[in-house]
Image 1 (cartoon, rainbow, N blue to C red):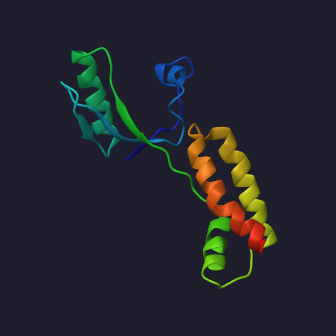
Image 2: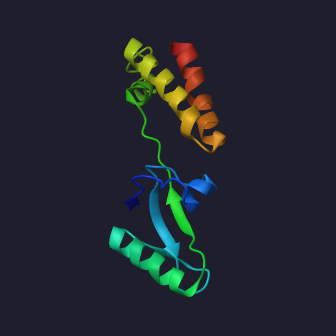
Length: 127
């Protein structure tokens, strides 16, 4: 996949508020019609966008946004498997830091809520 390095100030991606640095472009509009074509290289994405804009005023991108979990996640797996009683002080600190960071950049609050629903009870119980 092609990772978005930056969002151009004043561009349509910034105006939409839907594209963030770090997102991955996994597909673009087909040259004609409503189909989406997968792409794995920058050249493929660039070519598809150029071709589409030659025949149409708009391009649709399919993006994927991932959340890289901190060290707390591995510790939490160990808690779930009974290998440890709780998160280390570093694990708790990384969880809190990531939770705060997620609030700042996640467009989809449901993802943050899902992380909270899964992790908060375990942290509260095993602390």
